[in-house]
Length: 186
Image 1: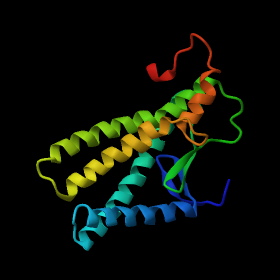
Image 2 (image 1 turned 60 degrees about the vertical axis):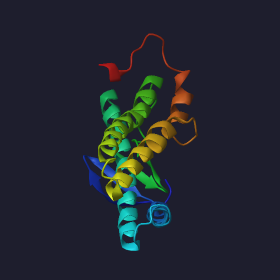
Image 3 (image 1 turned 90 degrees about the horizontal axis):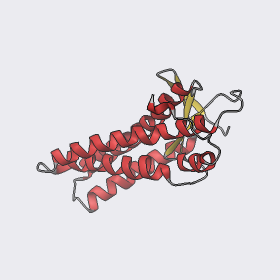
């Protein structure tokens, strides 16, 4: 494991972070603030507050995504023990000594994050639609939350990259046993 620091516990999960997560937080805050000044013509104080909230929302959304993995991992009988934030994302932490697991266990654990993120996408999309007539910072932040969850934590998480859920699904899909049902359906 690369250099990381424990920052606390949440719902029985150890929360760790790498220094790169702090850098990502500052960049999200700054970029969102600048976008709000340039595009939405917000005053600097409002934009800075909005940027800070967008950064908090992004990392909350990542934590929510990880809780989805944790919930599904719990159902498999092979639970997570934590999450580690790095850059703008996080990794699920599992015991090193859990041994060989079936493809179905890996697949179910990988699907948990995108499923939870899809739920949050739908909720924040409904909130953004409800706020549309009002406009203003609340609408912009609701729409940001919707887009962040849809593009990063739902659809983006399913792209088959080596470090994300889509990569895990691609790797294990061909190894699953025929006729076996996922525990998600139980």
